[in-house]
Length: 355
Image (tube, rainbow, N blue to C red; front, side, top):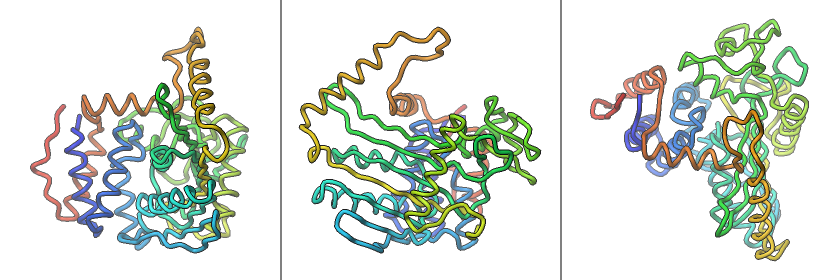
């Protein structure tokens, strides 16, 4: 089916508000989830609400929790999310990091103990809007591992995303890399499952360590696992996300000595940079333009199935397309959202869908 931007946003707002969030928090969460759907990241969009509602019922996600500052050492800031909505507490931490970066030129920001912070690219977009550069390293705890090490036959990580963001110029759009370190994001496996689709070859192993393309192996016990992207390279980045985002923030890693209650907790280590403190901005912009043009001037490979794109371009294209044509959603996810709404006493009869 196809949903309009307004319909999906309205449904998310109603569900989050009915689950206990105040108006401000409801807007932040709903805007974040909607933008994930609009930019093609359905794995981090409205479909996450089922997980959030389960966590609220279990006391593992605490609505109306603001981020708290643990340490303020000038250019170093440490925050605790208090298991609040990650979309809220991570945004608040980024706002403070951006404000401090204007004073100090660079900020190292640590955020720990946040419930699922969603699409990491959202926080890169915050820095881009401020004219700043940001690098983000994220790990996941409080959940069984679902991603293997390279050559591993059992899971040791979750999807441990990274994000790099740099503003654009008058000629060149911003560059925004937002990627999981697994071959496929866990949420994308859920989307494939609900849509009755298989995952690409080489993405998964079953509980016996055998290759498979069936996403159902991630949802039933004993569980299978996702494989890391880029073989040894992706595995290496995932491992460093554990150390940088997990250990260095104080939030903890996936090692089995730390508790797992069955929710999704994110820790994030972020570096925010004011480029004007490092380099003449006219030079930087000229280099961005020239390097981007150089990359895009490459002839396509013989087996290419689409054109060359700079990081962030797929999301921009999806945003334009979905705002014009609507947001596709499989029937299973839609039924799940309506069931959540009904459980919360939310009326949905006036919501319009098509197709």
